[in-house]
Length: 135
Image (cartoon, rainbow, N blue to C red; front, side, top):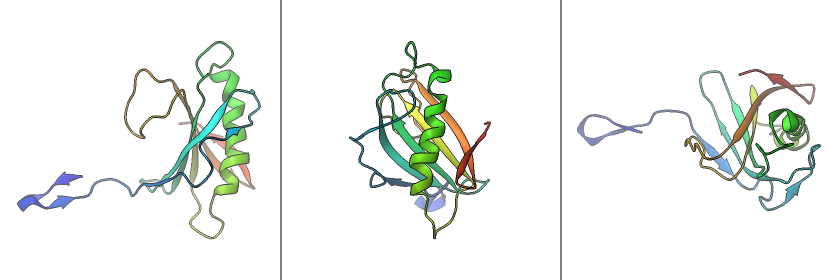
């Protein structure tokens, strides 16, 4: 938000919606690597290229031996197809992209935290499958 003339506020950026109700945040999710993963939140917004759903997960083991990006890449694909797609609104606007993120701990969206490792991947939905799109 930026301040306009005469004390008026001008809203900048996209509308953001936070939803914890998409899934219980304390429930461990099953992923191919077997690492512990919990759901943090789902955020949607509409930047310049259309609607994006962001599904954020906590995976405290990422970055350690056996949990580098290459070791957990399949987990993100799995979470996109098995967690995100079933939760995408069937009757509402469809996203152009789904972003899956894994973080070592919960972080505030959009706030840099150099001490927390995070992995991200972007996908488009095609025939109920997540197709990797490179950032």
